[in-house]
Amino acid sequence: KNEVEQSPQNLTAQEGEFITINCSYSVGISALHWLQQHPGGGIVSLFMLSSGKKKHGRLIATINIQEKHSSLHITASHPRDSAVYICAARGVFGNEKLTFGTGTRLTIIP
Amino acid sequence: AAGVIQSPRHLIKEKRETATLKCYPIPRHDTVYWYQQGPGQDPQFLISFYEKMQSDKGSIPDRFSAQQFSDYHSELNMSSLELGDSALYFCASSRDGNYGYTFGSGTRLTVV
Image: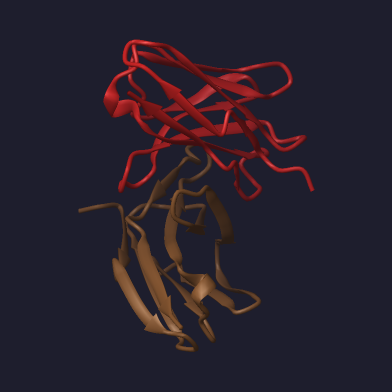
C-alpha cells in the first residue's frame, strides 16, 4: 500500500464541470502539497497545506488532519486545466522530503 | 521573482558516459532536494542537502553523487549512465524546512 494514494487515477470531464481529486496519506506530515504537471513539463506547486482550506482563483484545496485526507477542487473547469495533479506529503521536521502520490490525469473536454 | 534554475533543460548522453546536472535554488533557500521521475512513474526522492551537508538520502544509485556548494547551488553527478537513467530530474529548494517548496523545471536526461 502506498503511503500517499490518490483517486481517481484518470478523470475526464466536460468544460465547466466541478472537479474533485482526493488524496489520502498514512504517514505523519508537516504539510501536504498539491502539484500540477503538464505533459513533458516541470512541476508547479499549487498549494501547501497544513490545516484547513486554501483558495487560489478557481482552485480550492482542503485538508483534514484527523482523517489524513485532502481534496483539490477545480471550479468551472477549462481545457487548460488538463494536466496531471499530484499530491505529495511532506515529512515531519528533520525528514522533509516529499512522498508523492501516483497522480491524477485530468482531461477537460471543450 | 527568481525561481529555481536547473541546467541544462535537456541532455542526451550515451551509455557509460557521465552527466552533471545543476540546480540553483531561490536566494536565501538553504535546502535542496533532488527527485527522479522515470517515464510514466511517480517522482522518487534521491537526495537532499541542508547548509551544504547531506541531510537525507533516498533511492540514489551508487553511480550517482551530489553536493551542495558554498553558494547553495547543487550538482548531481551521474556516471556509467544506463538506459534506465533516462528520466526527468528535478530539484526543489526551501528554507529551514519551514517554507514551501519551489520546484525547478527539471532536466530531461535521455541515455541512448
